Image (cartoon, rainbow, N blue to C red; front, side):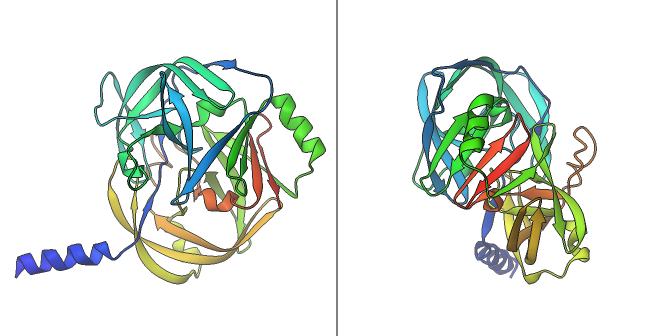
Length: 303
C-alpha cells in the first residue's frame, strides 16, 4: 500500500509543469579586465528556448553555449565538481556552496574579458533538450559597463559602449523607458500593482516571474494552480501560481502577468539583504526590442 502511495505521488508531480530559475547571489570577486576587439557594436545570434536566451561564446578557448542571465553576479561555469575555495551563494530556493575558478579568457561578441574569477555551479539541468554544450551563465560583471540590446524579432544581442548607446537612443527614440537601481548585481525596478508600489529584480535567467509568497494575500490572482520551480541549487519546490490583471513600471505596462509565489525570505535578509518583492523574468522584457543600459541604469523598449 505504501508503495502505491509513493507511485501515485510521483505520477502526480510529473503532471505539474516545472519552471527553472537561474537566479544567483554571491559575494563580489575580481572584476574582469576588458579588451574590446573592435570599436563598434557586434551582434551575437541567440536561441530563445524555454523562456531563456542561449548565446554562443568562447571560454578559455573552448566554444559553447551560455545563458544570458542578469540574475547572476558574474560568469558562472558549468561544473559538477566544486573545486577550489567555496563560498556561500543564494539561489531562488536556498543558500548553498559554490566553487570559484580562475578564468583565463572569455570571448563574446566584441568583448574579451581576461584573468578574473568565475563561479563553479552545476547548471546542467538548464541544458536544452538533446544538447550537451551548455558552458554556463553570462552574468553582471561581464556586461557591467555595456548596454545590452536584445532584439527578440531577429534573435540577436548587441553590446554597446557608453557612447554608442547614446547615439543609438538619439537615432531611434524608445517607445518606453524605465529606470532601475542596482542592488548588488541585480537591476531593480519599481512596479505598480493594483495601486501599490513594489520592488522587483530583472532576471533574464528566470523562465517566469516570481513574487514573495507573503504578498499573495494582497491580490486576487486568477487561474490559481501549482507548479514546480527548480533553482541553481537543483532543489525542486512546489509553489502556487496565478495571473495578475496588469503591472506597470515607469512607462511600461503589461497585462495578464503570470507570477509564481515563492518563499524568498533568504534573499531579503542575512548576507545579501535585498529589498525586493520578487523577480521579473525575461517575459517582462519580451517584445520587439529592448536595451538594458547598465551605465545609465535605464531600460529602453521599442515597439
